[in-house]
Structures are given as C-alpha cells and as structure tokens.
Image (cartoon, rainbow, N blue to C red; front, side, top):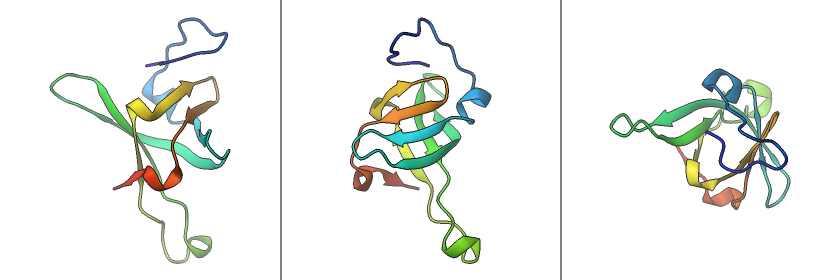
Length: 95
C-alpha cells in the first residue's frame, strides 16, 4: 500500500494501522485529520481512496462537516505516522 518512501524499505501497512495515521497537506502544511476509512474497488481489489472524517462544527454542537475523500493517486507518501498528500484543499471531493 505504500507508494513512495524516503529511507524506509518495504513498509507494509494494514488498514488498522492506516487508520491511526494523520493526513497532512504538503501544499500548505495543514492537518486534514486522521484516516477514518478506505474505499476499495471490489472488482479489482485495489484501494481507490481514503476517507477522512469532517471536522466538528462549533465545538461539536452542530455535528460534523462532510467527509473528505482523497483519491489514492493524490497520496504522495505514506510514512510511519503520517500520510502526505499534495493537492489544493479545495480540490478534495466531499462525500
């Protein structure tokens, strides 16, 4: 599941380990949140995207914002603790 690694060889990652990783936008350094789910193509068995939970609105009183869907192709690096993506925040497709 790892696309590119810097100094780490053959880093394998389970879905449960991926859910603990924080997603960071390399374009502006912002934290997008932790991975909450993944989307898999049932025909090919390939990962299509990762899903991030929306941030709480007004301290959680008014629920959460929409989930963020990041395509697998947009992921630049999956490291030990973080997932780096390189896209403008407005280009993420909401679910």
